[in-house]
Image (cartoon, rainbow, N blue to C red; front, top):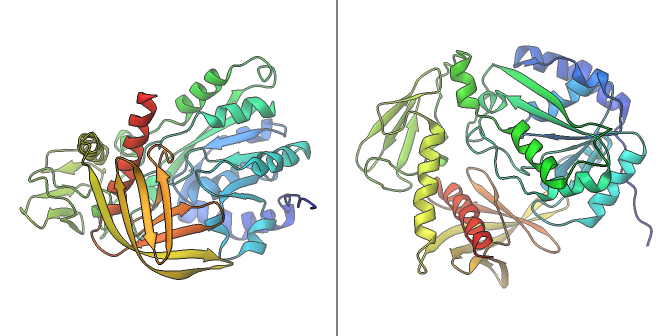
Length: 388
């Protein structure tokens, strides 16, 4: 069976995107700040970057041009325009799965003196900080024996938080570093590569906003944030938070908190979104330590078929000490405890891979349930790893 070779990024297509769209977007919608560091670098090399949204994809294209890289992306991002996206230079894979063919494709691109871009978090940042990163990325880089460049975007999350329906104009600062030089490739250890990645990609966008006095004053400042901050710190009720304008309110006890234009929370137990989120994590950690822990959610199953998702009927999702089970129709997906170290999710969907397909599950109730499930999967994976 003949193996298809990946398509290298088409320079005329990338050039058109940069000139007719990118330059306008990154001056009027985002103020992209970078120091032309890529102009001093000669491919091939691997770029790893943090992932908040379009700014760290389009921003990287802008920073690297006229050098054109191939980006590793999720197959779910190719559903709408697969032919066009392929020629933009992508290497598709299923999220959170082992794919040996991807290694072959990356090597092909590097052998043709092109860079490869990888987002090791494999999903968008939840609260403007680095998501869990698996050490496997360091092993891959060591195996491929090419220099490593890290790119950390500060402010990209503020521009379009994953929970928001609108974009905000913000300055986005790009920190570009050569993490592994050509001279170090042969000698640096896997652990050191991993440590450098984590150190260089660690960031906090709310801290960046406060430190730089970045004012964000929009009518829907926190609308959607209830999907991430789902538990009331005052009464402990889950999935009762509502948002309007700049105010989050618990529909059970009435406790309210306001977010100011510098991203700080006023009037509640926490003054930072990140602290509230980590408190929720600690609550979930306590829950999963109970042998009788159970999370049950009701969803609608959809399967990616070609360019569209096909409806597969109602789905029952259960997460317990054994792992994650989803039942829909006559089908059943099971991921044992620790098999997933995190989840691909958004306000309304959970995305799960199987051996032969990609599914997404749309929540039928309870805003915030997808966030809690993500925290439970991450904490269970940590617990399983600690027990080994």
